[in-house]
Image 1: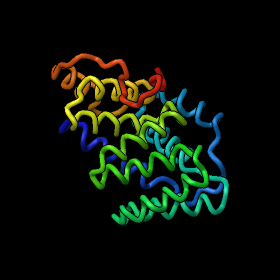
Image 2: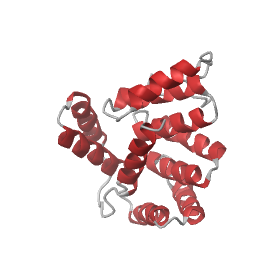
Image 3: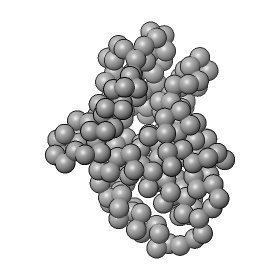
Image 4: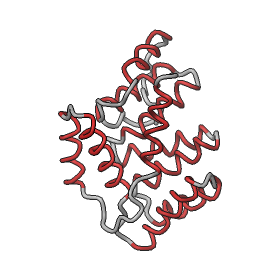
Amino acid sequence: MTILRPCLAALLGLMLGANALAQNGGSTTMLDTLFAKLQTATDPMAIQSLEGAIWEQWVLVPDGPQRELMMRGIAEMQQRQLKQSVETFSKLIEIAPDLSEAWNKRATAYWLLGNFPASLNDICETVKREPRHFGAYSGLGMIRAEMGEYPRAVAAFELAKKHNPHIVGIDDEITRLKAMGGDAPADPLGCSQRTAGR
């Protein structure tokens, strides 16, 4: 976990630093293209650019008032105003419940506040809406590992790796968690749903 934490912290930083000036809605076609390129990329700079572009697509919100809530919530998280960011993302979810990144951002804020049950719930909502969300799966893996739910952590990290095979340290973390043992549960992610992305 020690190797993976800095990598996930960098991923969180990339997520929080995503383009705050986005004006158009994220495109499914664009995301499909970016994910396909990410699978085959080998150049570290290309990988970093592709990851950043995926995060930018996820935060793109075409509706002005919704975009303003997204950007305000991100700014509040960056300023460590975590309770306020939860409120802001909750407002956004209320008016745009299908917006996967609103759920993911609120999950991140809850995680930073140490509210694992609320974060887990929002991560599950995120992957229902965007089953390739490697950031959500990485967060889910971290939480499950901290809760001692090693098989579920492995399942989550494997899904993160499936959609982004370039996450630094993830192979070592999967190996470490598998060594911790435990039987695979019927609901691998603990989301009370069919496992998204599998």
